[in-house]
Length: 596
Picture (cartoon, rainbow, N blue to C red):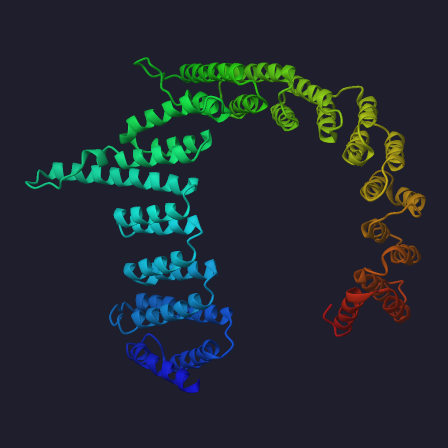
């Protein structure tokens, strides 16, 4: 192995000598490169090979190439690239070849190889890399598409790209993405040929290349379209092909055919109706004069939206399903939330949205998510009456939805309703206790701003009776925070005392009280010890930080007793288990050496 490494290092010497001779690197730097290269070579030549070693080797060589480039730019020297850069690139390719042969299944490794070749190697070399990769990973359509795009866009070889797509479709005859990209490629090819023809005609050359009219019109793309829709059914795929065709102005006939087929073949799919309706927004007015004033433009947009809604109205009559109504209400909501300075347009959009909502609600063909979306959007724009109408309708249909009730109550709070407390009580009648926590918190927060301290405390006490288990932990923390905010330390301590046996707790519950105590002018160390002791009773077997903080408190507090630290340490060692004990010992050792 030593002979091989020595031989490979000697192979580097000509390029290194050139680097030193032309002044890109100093003698000391060349020696450092040789040393590093020897280490890297050893790792990729030993018997047991690791992928990380090959990656590190490649990365080092890439960094070296980039450094050479920067130094060339700095001194303005561009010669001897064959002897220097090409030699390094060739060596990196060899390393990549070895790595990709050993770890064939690693797609990321292949992609790194491709990325390297794109930047540093020749196009012929990259073409071979793609071929080798696809021979192994033929089951991945994305790699076929990547290779074909490179052939088309970088090598400017539409024929090679076409052959790759055809091979890919033999492996994946039902892959929509492949058909879409192949379709796009043929349209791009036709557009490119049309531009070439125009250039030749402008140049008035005697001999113009013979361009096939069928190809110029996009005949190959039409064949792909016909074949693909016979294999892949569904409006979504059809619409995606139409969206691609619309990017090419010369393909008007193809666009019309795809559009007509979409309407003929997929009338039972909401996506078809949705596409047809939204298309009305793009169709320009038939009048010769285009609107110029802001008001005229708003009126024109309003007309387009009315045409869209006419299609949607026909759609929900033909296809009265939840999916179709979802498309309709989504469109209305999108237009409603679209910014406009026209009061006329905003008013029309609101009216239309509410009309469509009422129809869909009456038929019970909207999902809970749509009630939420609509209510939130109306609330954001301060349409409280309409937001409340939607939220009330939502709670009638989805009585067991905590989110729906919370939304309704949020709107009522924004509306300054006088019956909030009664409505919270009504919500709890319909909801399961396990989904009520957010509503109890909302009630307490509202009460804090609108009611007396006694009323708010009554809400917290009711909540603690109703909410049990893990959810009650959050509630206790909120209650303690409120007590400190509203009544200071004395009130917080009273709440803490009332809850101290009401498990479960969180560590934060006790840490809050410790912090509250420390914020007092006459901080009582006895109280701090009490809070730590109570916290350790609950969490002392698992929380090493709690023990450490207790010891630091005794060491750093003016009224602390440093002599207690030894006893606390041994108690911690008895109570902590497994990894927590190890973590505690490590932290304690760091603290002892002054790192904390």
